[in-house]
Length: 57
Image (cartoon, rainbow, N blue to C red):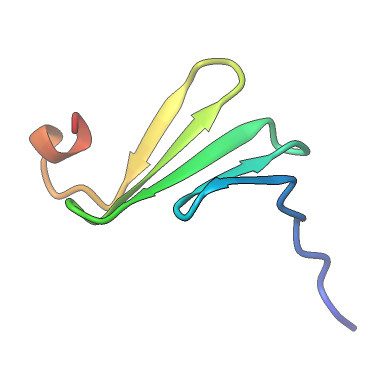
């Protein structure tokens, strides 16, 4: 059986995706190589950063 993968509702740019079912925008940055998830509540999570300074970019 295939797993249900979430559908991408809107691709805003090459590295930006909006997923309506999660209410979240995902941005993938190249330098520093990080991923930011921005939720509809305003919460932002940053993964991949090796320091707080990189997370603030």
